[in-house]
Amino acid sequence: MDALSDVLSTLRVSSALSSRFEGQGAWALRFPAYKHIKFGSVLSGQVYLWPDGDAPIRLEEGDFYLLTDGRPFHVASDPACRPGDGVSTVRSRRGADGIARHYCDGEGVAVGMTSGRFTFENDVSDVLLRHLPPLIHLRASNVGSGALAHVLSLLRLESSDLHIGGEVARSSLAALALVHLLRAYLGKSSEPAGWLGALSDAKIGKALSAMHEAPDKRWTVDSLARTVAMSRTAFANRFRERVGETPLEYLNRWRMVLARTALKDTDESLTEIATKIGYLSDTAFSIAFKRNAGVSPGRFRSTAKGQAIHRAADL
Figure 1 (tube, one colour):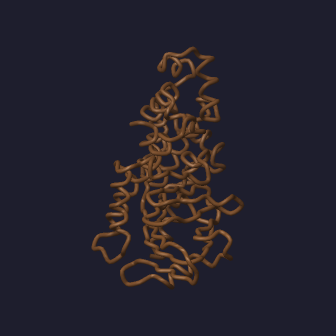
Figure 2: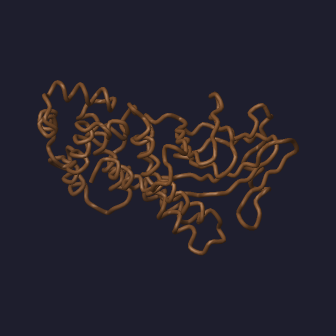
Figure 3: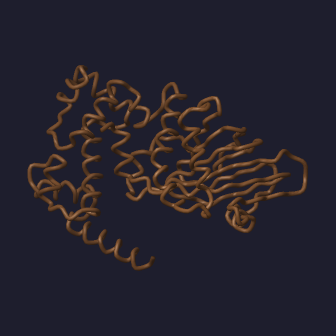
């Protein structure tokens, strides 16, 4: 399994809550902070979008966007307008067909948008998001009529709760849409930064995939360098430059991600988990886990299970 697929599988992209919006006239809306990733596309007209503290960026028909850093953000036909509350406005203007219509006084071309949020069941999103820019703007020319446009068209069809089975359909399409959005971002960026950009580096991407494919292997910097046919020094320097940490720091951090996931989602013993992620004993694993998480594996598991029970009871 390649590294991106492995991370997305572990994150478990669980939903894409899509909605439709139409606006006309002069308006601006501010939306609150969010978790994980917001996304959307412009169906018609043009609109301005920007996170708090940044300059507005104009999006035109056929453009897509990703918001990744959780800051409140603005959407506007005219950035000079005083922003209204986005959440209450959209809720109050939503019709029986699931489309929110916000028609204001003033001139302006009608705007049509679809938007939603990718949510992750496992809170390891820092692996994916830590080096992404806060706003990724994909122009229509970046995606054309390819796979991304088709996938997001399917999400748009599922944007109303009136569709039978819509929740299941959105969840099934979420990971596929995110993969294609990230591919498009990588394709348009000559030198993408951070972990995601490192995947497009033939050598470093191969090393990352090797670690993800066999996290239990007794990897060393030397063995990783041999795997990608580089000298030890050149590999270590290039890995740190592209990923932002050393190969073994990354490997250990990913092993802890896998450990937390296994402790929360399975009943595997500590010995079984330790073996799967490359520790020689459950004692060595427990020491490493407590150093990383601040609590023992057993305490982490009992706390996670307790929180899951409380969440289920609240449903």
